[in-house]
Image (cartoon, rainbow, N blue to C red; front, side, top):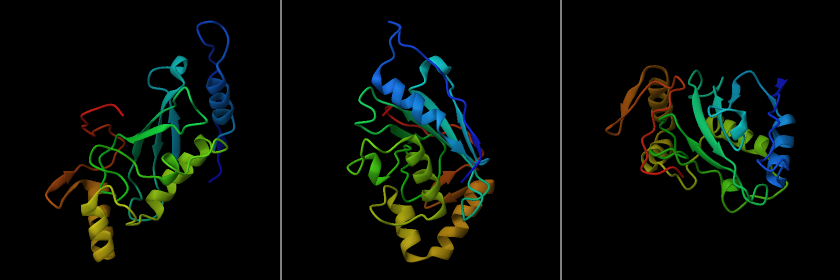
Length: 186
């Protein structure tokens, strides 16, 4: 996944001194080399660089052609603790529940401080290329993938491109909209 480097924001803390996590995040963002199917944006402006969105448009697999938006919230304890990542686009995926929570093992117990934002973006990309049923957050998606991969792939393909009802829930076409309804902001 090679592409053009991302120009990262340069932001100072209100006291004029940059905190360690801001400096690390600045470094991570400046070293990103995103492919053309991944976009990074700062909806609240670069002065809020600890909160940004990544839009991912898979170009292969059953999710190809859809655009999925993820919100990243980087905690003050970064890089000791991972960023919080939430999918803002409704998607029928075993590792993403209906509230947008994402199951990547390194966003929980396998995180190490030497990992970076790039690690998370590549992990998200892999989720769409190789969905699996391990510890499925969306049990309906996990069950369908486990029991009948071809039906799963067709249902995903239909929902991603034109919207579809799968197991009684409607999934709109994945066009990069922020349409996940959740009870909280985590």
